[in-house]
Image (tube, rainbow, N blue to C red; front, side):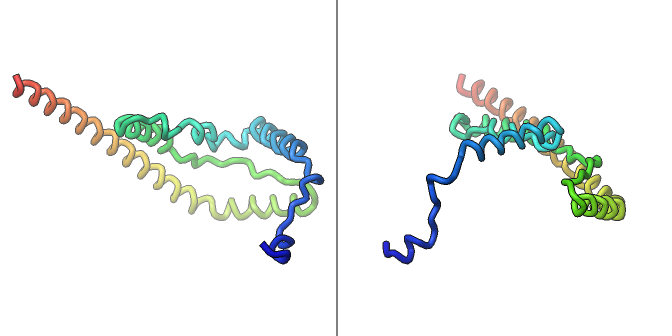
Length: 148
């Protein structure tokens, strides 16, 4: 590399306290978890699926059917709009609350329709899975009887 590209991007390693940054991040996450901010986003589910542990297509399908069954219900309830402090924070919060009140009737209808669609698709996919699972079992039993 030449001197021009070497100087383009430099991070001074001695001046960054990564432990302090990570401590602050963990503290903020804990505060938000305790305040219930992450309640709507079940972040633990992101870590539960490790594709390497799924050994066959059946396990993969079962996992996703279970996930669809537990996530179809879009949360359409209100959640608190909180101020981030300061004069501008309070003004921004007031503006957000006014905009929310103006748009609530419209967004509620859209989210209600999405929730209904999700429920129907979830039920349809699960019903098809059960139907084809039963049919496959019947065909396997028939093949087993024919081999005798």
